[in-house]
Image (cartoon, one colour):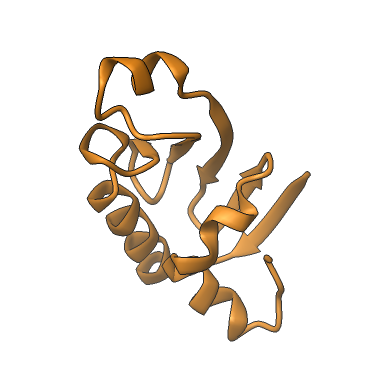
Amino acid sequence: MIQIVRMNEKERQALVSYCRQHDVRRGGCFDVRGDENSGAVNVWSSPWDTEENTERSEPVGTILMRRDHITVEGPVISLLVRLPLKRATENRGLVLC
């Protein structure tokens, strides 16, 4: 499933900031590459907090960042419930979960 969500720069910055704070190497599930204007966030099934979890963890989706929108690929939408994305999309009447 691919979903495109229009987001302004401030909303994309908030999303990237949240994902960086919840990095897969620090107990979260996100791996940020690039920035809010041209980057990607890989979403993993479990944090890399132990060697076993690192080996067992699998990618479950990707969030692609562009200058005026993001593209969500894969079944990650249910993981985005707590993110700034939820607030950004509620204002537009979009439903992610």
